[in-house]
Length: 430
Ligand SMILES: Cc1cc2nc3c(=O)[nH]c(=O)nc-3n(C[C@H](O)[C@H](O)[C@H](O)COP(=O)(O)OP(=O)(O)OC[C@H]3O[C@@H](n4cnc5c(N)ncnc54)[C@H](O)[C@@H]3O)c2cc1C
Image 1: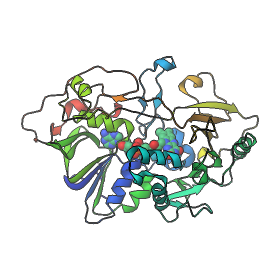
Image 2 (image 1 turned 90 degrees about the vertical axis):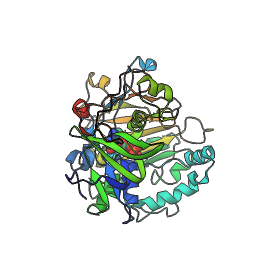
Image 3 (image 1 turned 180 degrees about the vertical axis):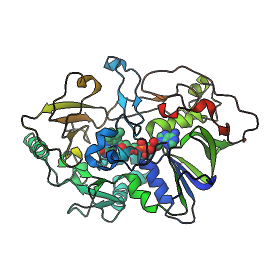
Image 4 (image 1 turned 90 degrees about the horizontal axis):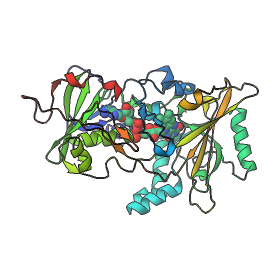
């Protein structure tokens, strides 16, 4: 797999932007066909780091160069607090910094998607077949729902710590049933509690990049570029023909004969689309971006599962289990709801927020990380300016407009700014 080669090709069949969870699957699946040339572009770096690979180290990635470190706009409903939004940056994206919980969508979420789209391909029966094809489940039983032999190694927690088992029995005491695993029958009813399924293989995080792309390393039809920021989608008329990238301050363009796939995560995908001229015309015009296509949904309907941490101190210090999160609970706040609207992910060490950290954090404890499984509030992603270095704004705040730099004389007609990118350096700080 050539990485960052000086003799880089510039034409491919497909260009996949962002090597996170979605991009890794798309690039890996496309590259199964040896006739198809695939380029996968990632802004961050390698995932070969002990904080990525050793399961218990996952919190150590947050706030580092492997995190985009987004911060929401001041929220008037939360005393103007600005809520942090961590997102993975590097090969594997979120799947290289997350808690490694393998968590399927609920049956009725899929039924709702199918009803809303009018397309039965989204219904649970269809998606269940995909889940089965994707998994290599290392637990026992449930052949009706679980899959074996797929690319994603999914292993149940073994030798769980006492606190994980205590949570499950406490839930049972409140009438919340215990399940063998959280990804079978538990995701078809009102919810329940279970020990987790994790994407941990041979004691190491097996991210979605490791599951789908790394095994194809060395295939001549798959090229992965790291530390390369996609700054714009290039269009000829209304058709996406490639992307503009920036690496070490150098602008380059890559062209796709078939398709450009944007899988840059929930914040940067709308940001790059809008900065490329696709989005709500009012927002684009506010920043002097020529409107290629008015598409009001871009940047709208932003959702996240808001959660909060309650820390309990241990009277006697307890060991931290595999990955540090071994039990999960989903439940509905009213029995009439057709799916669970609350979740609780237990973490076996203290996880303070910026605010609670200043109050003092116990040396030994565990965290009840509780959240909304079905938040009804909706936010947005907007621009603070037309340039790749202008940070995205998400949630509630409008940003100050600035101006797109003029096209330089002599630049490639479909690759504006070709060459050295003087004003675009310092890209780590989006
Ligand atoms: C701390 C944390 C814990 C989590 N825990 C879990 C969990 O246990 N289980 C679970 O299922 N989910 C968990 N999640 C959520 C899950 O990881 C994400 O939902 C998932 O990774 C989203 O996939 P994605 O492909 O949409 O985006 P991402 O995985 O974020 O991928 C986007 C990729 O695009 C890259 N990129 C962005 N902009 C550019 C650009 N301009 N140019 C080039 N590349 C770019 C990014 O660097 C990134 O690699 C967690 C997330 C976090 C942050």
